[in-house]
Amino acid sequence: GAGVSQTPSNKVTEKGKYVELRCDPISGHTALYWYRQSLGQGPEFLIYFQGTGAADDSGLPNDRFFAVRPEGSVSTLKIQRTERGDSAVYLCASSLRLAGADTQYFGPGTRLTVL
Amino acid sequence: AQSVTQPDIHITVSEGASLELRCNYSYGATPYLFWYVQSPGQGLQLLLKYFSGDTLVQGIKGFEAEFKRSQSSFNLRKPSVHWSDAAEYFCAVVLGGGYNKLIFGAGTRLAVHP
Image (cartoon, rainbow over all chains, first blue to last red; front, side):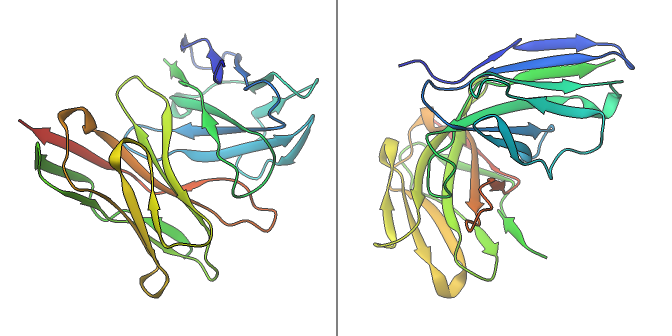
């Protein structure tokens, strides 16, 4: 079946602009995760959802970052007043359940460049 | 500090040689343990995972990993490397107990010489 998809694959924006990044999880997966990967580093956790609610948003760096999952499927990561330091690859993952041993399946990522 | 450590930033091996990538974690209890691979332009793909039972875990693409509680290690191995194994490898943990996020190491970049 289809894997996790993310759109756009690349996004170039100017400092101070607003961006939205979209994630379509694997059908039937109840848990959805967002990570951020800076150049030369491992992915870092941002937020995860169980259904429609954010179960843990402790990784969001500041209040410019916000994520929603209104119907428990597709999720959107929103970044306000983008800064050059926000440039990174944003990864989305989903798992069947919100359980530690469940495999998280990753999408290809959205590469965000803030000029 | 609690962390996942991959001591080798970059490893180069010859095709057909054996491979071992190191991973150590520093958490009080044994976490769930994972190895992911990331090829250029590709998403992260799970190679294998450990959460209980036999400490030697078999994964995809001929990889295996051994959990050693006494050393807080979960090293990844492959007996004979193929050129297509060139990629970045990430060790990761999930603490469990309601903390379900993956905590990744910094990664090891593997280059394979013909």
